[in-house]
Image 1 (cartoon, one colour):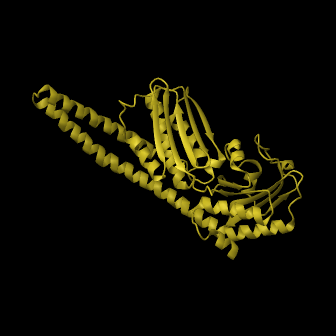
Image 2 (cartoon, rainbow, N blue to C red):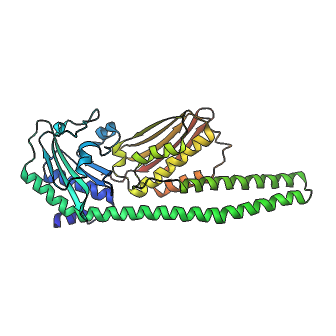
Image 3 (cartoon, helix red, strand yellow):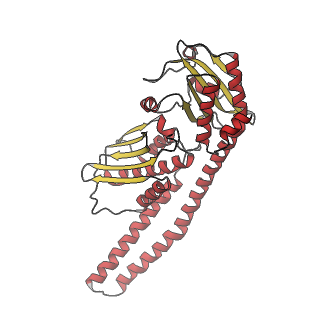
Length: 366
């Protein structure tokens, strides 16, 4: 018990806990590759963290597994599963191009509260020796030791997600009932001044511009409230799943979308990281649809040695940087990028489209 406790004592971050457990599972079973997943209350795979595949290979593989086939079956099991050749199992769905040819398999459920909350997976490539009963016992003991830490970290992350949703709802309510109403009243008062008397042309122009700007601010805030109140997936934030969800919400038919999200980039993102990056992606997509009239939008999340970068690019109207008006959405994107410790770049070229890019430092790049 002490070994696993020491392994996890320095962190309460779910991503870091899962990463350390995957490393430990690989070591105690002498596996070539290891991974760990968590499942939601419906048995749907939420997190998948691996060890043993180098970053370049992981980037080529693209999206992490969705939890179908054999991995999904393990969410419903309460006992280990040991196979000499997992590809011969009737639920095996095969590998994407470039994936190591894994055959020898050991899957062990992580149980807490009477249900399977996650699983450990250990594999060896074809031709290697099968896992033994001793390997299975070592993995079972690790799963037993890890169950409390994983359950606690999952609950903490879900509580944080619930708090964020509740806070978003509160902010939306305050903006609608407070800020918008005050701006609306100010706009009416300014407009009434224009009607009440004659002003010198330059003063009248300032007042008309003020009314126009107030109306633009109200529009910006209404759009922001719509995004705050937009229906969100019930599970924890996961960009690989949630970006397609947002695209279905915001992007009308007729605009082609391309999504490329690498497993390596997802590996170390916390729930808060994912929340902020998802907001930036949503705002960039919304701006492209509302202002740029593109016929193609691409969303890309990838990682190199020093940074993780999210890029949203469209081929629409673009903009002239000298004349662009930065609304509330752009300001909030920059605020979230700063909270991530990163940098936001918005590049527009008239007639050639817009690129929104946020890059954040690697969390685990030892």
